[in-house]
Image 1 (spheres, one colour):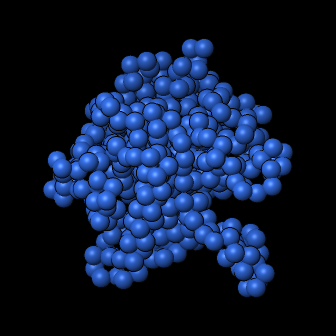
Image 2 (image 1 turned 180 degrees about the vertical axis):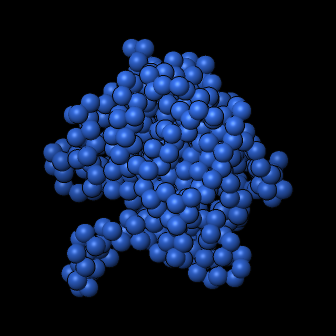
Image 3 (image 1 turned 90 degrees about the vertical axis):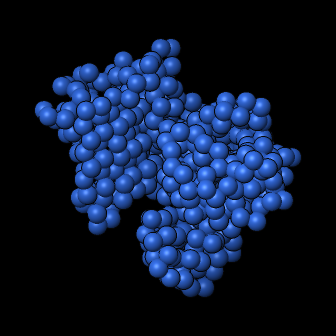
Length: 394
């Protein structure tokens, strides 16, 4: 059974064509920097590798480009879309409606759309991916895997806000958490690797960022909340902010609520601090002496360190921290900033190991470090494919 996985992020599309149940990746690739002046496209099979830099304005254009390559006479891996049995979609926000993998129909799409306001950078891109894929792979089952599902194990003390009770019971206002597919995948890999680890913190760093406290394989707390804007400093999202700032912007400075939403979701974070949303640009400019970029990187790491401390307290101990996703896996500098002056938590980084690159799980801590420091490449696509396959088997 061939399943294609489409993971539409806020500024990227990752995709894999996977033969199930063997988990054989037939084709993989990604498009990043969508909407910027130059986007990067990769398309990799066993016999071909294509890398291009070209402008890709939006997710629709990106997905159409991917479909064209899949069926290209020279480099394609399928002759007909009918070879695809299912399309698995990562959907960021499932709200209270979806707690498990779900076959997509009109009702499901309508509910995903209703959640646009809670995930304005993601659910629209996710739904666009669903609509384009439905048109292209019109004989395949369309299946949604929700980022929020993994966090359903959080205890009420972690997911409930200190607001009037009816807002939870009647309006379902609570912490939902996101990046659940990634946190689930890398935590399972880490637990298997470490064998006896029960208290871990997963640190997912990309254009969107989040951390999760995990005990015995279950999510106990996470930084993203009702929507995917809280917690860490992200590419264009502010992360934690005093709510009074929002009231001040509206009541005193005259901003509309829509303008504030746009600012906090699309104009803040690393972009607001530096003028750049891509960490590669920020690190490059910081190295050249840009003080705004240097400060932004320090602030980014400081926020992560604060959450390591709070989650170590929530778990009553710490066996390992795991870095994952685009920045977590590839930025040795961010990892160094985060792990510096963390000896109290038993976190001691081996600088030489930290600079090494690998596509496999690896330790980057010193032999003396009481807490393991792991880099675990995430593979949300494989995790989604497994969940889709299990659903279709019934």
